[in-house]
Structure formats: structure tokens, C-alpha cells
Length: 174
Image 1 (cartoon, helix red, strand yellow):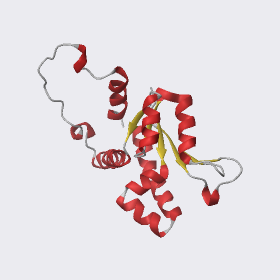
Image 2: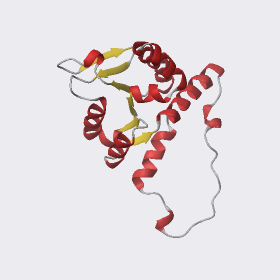
Image 3: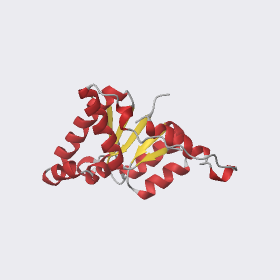
Image 4: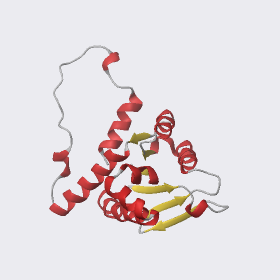
């Protein structure tokens, strides 16, 4: 099953120390650097990636869609926020996607609809680790959190909900 990543573009940029510095100098530089970092990640992981930004220069009358080296980039139309675009996509695709955002409203909305959510800084770390591991020829699974042995617990109350377990599985594949 292919994972479809929906990235709240400006949220990820603002959460990243490096990208936010570039964004402060020039918004376009921040966006370009984010896309440049996503390209090797996409080549390694083969995930479908869509980055959503608030409309460029105030937005046009229609939503603008661009494809750059295999990554879909969407700019919301005038009067529409990127949050609204992400919510529409989640409403249609639901559990087939992972949403990258630290925006609590989008995260809650997405989880209620069955999509997995990963915080922007956590995704940035996974993205950088995948690229680093690929360059060094390492097995990135050694960097995953270790499986800890737990004593057997009785009863269903100690088990995560199925939706949360499925969400965790998707996030581990990032």
C-alpha cells in the first residue's frame, strides 16, 4: 500500500530551524528548500507526496497545482487557506494518507477521519534520517525506537484502538 503524505508546507517550514531562517529572508527560498529536501526522500521511500501552501501572492481565483520532480505542490485559491485544502483531501482519502502538521486543528480533524498524523519536527527528523542512511548505505531500521518487552497484560483496555495502531504502522514506514 502506497502512503500518501500530505504536508502542511508553511507549518513544516515554520517548525524547522533551518527552513524558517530561509523563509524569513525570502518566502520562496523557504519553499524551494523544502521541496529540494523532499526530492531525495521521495526517491528513497517512494511515497506519494503532496505539499499544500497558502495561495501564492494572495492566491488566484483557482487553486494552483504544480508538479516538481515527482512532488505535487498545491497553492490554495484566493480566500481559501491551506488548512481547508488539506481538510478536503483528508475528507476524500481518509485512512490512505499521513498528514504532516503541527497544527492541532488539522491534526484532530485528520485523526477523526482516520488519517495518520505526524508532527512537523518529527517528520523532518525522519526525512533527514532516511536521506542520511541512504547516503551512508545504512539500514535505517537500526535508528527506529527499540521494541521493548512488556509483561503480558490482560484485557482489551490496555490495547490501543485499532485506528491508532494502524496510524502507528503508517508512521513507522516514513
